[in-house]
Length: 491
Image (cartoon, rainbow, N blue to C red):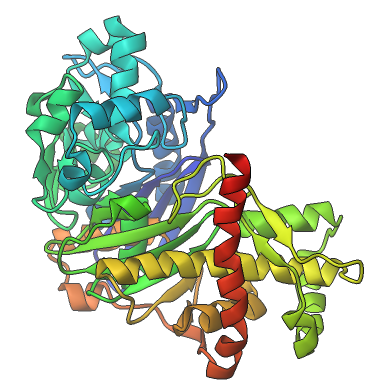
């Protein structure tokens, strides 16, 4: 039976997942990566580390599943988005890659908007330091010799593709995070590139995520004992994760409760709301896009309050909080929490926004504080879902993923606040590596989209309750009044 490899080039590790044609896991491995922070706000990695980690992860999968490996019929790629990997004319790396969470290029973001007044309309997004384009403006200003030598700009997963195949290719979903793509047209945008001193010759070729981008280099195929293996276009991490959980039709989506929080909605047309910090990107499949709202402190807020309270067992803390909140008077009189501990993205785009508790009383204990934090994150995610809805990207179905999804109490609260059923998928392999492997299957012709991208089995569904939602409504209104007051206090 044919097998398919998904490679996810993350920030903390490279993950390799080998599945068979029935999507049974044959082998999985990962290799760690290190982030370098040589100066405040800087975040960099050595692209050679991505490649070496890829080789280590692949070697582990080959050793664990030798029979499945020799039947390799396709490779798919996923990865951290936005990273600027600069190569000279011979394909040599010129400097460490500047990552998605690098914050040095704030001034260059303002410059981009001055240079291209209709940037948001062209790119579907506003300029932020996380994106790739302002990073190149920073290099042009501060490292002119590096900029002058730059002939190619690749994203992290696409550098690994280059090492696998010798081809410089990207996919639509990852390219959409550069600020050089006209997201609606799914094509590189000349004026956006020119504003950074670049042109299309600096850019990789573009394919859809489910198309063949190139073939595995013959030397690697021989070394690894496999035949001619197509490499799919792949996708950015969130788009690939969506493919992995079957979010491929308009109205599908997911809510991710990780360190940050993401609400992701698939559309069959381009939608945008850059003024409210909605990320508007192409999906990893043809003819589809996605809108994505992001809050910066989701599970991070829970980790923060648990640390403040000295709670070593977060699960036990959540159980006590759920029992406390079962008394309606407790929940109704809890403080209201603004979860902007690290600033906020959607809908405010305010890095200086701060967290706060409002309505604290002497009688409030640990459970009240934890409840307020969980509720505040839910309210912030509801703001993001409202931005998606207003932009024309409403959710019809939604999977709940990420570490915070382990709490049934929080899951039910989110369903009630968002007014949306949230399905908790079975199994751990619902991430970007599985989506990459599925894209490899599609590129290799190993099934159609409906069969390859089926949703995983659902372990539990949290359904919204109208009575509970009504109790949240006045507290949500109070939550929404807090940010303007907090912002005014900073003025």
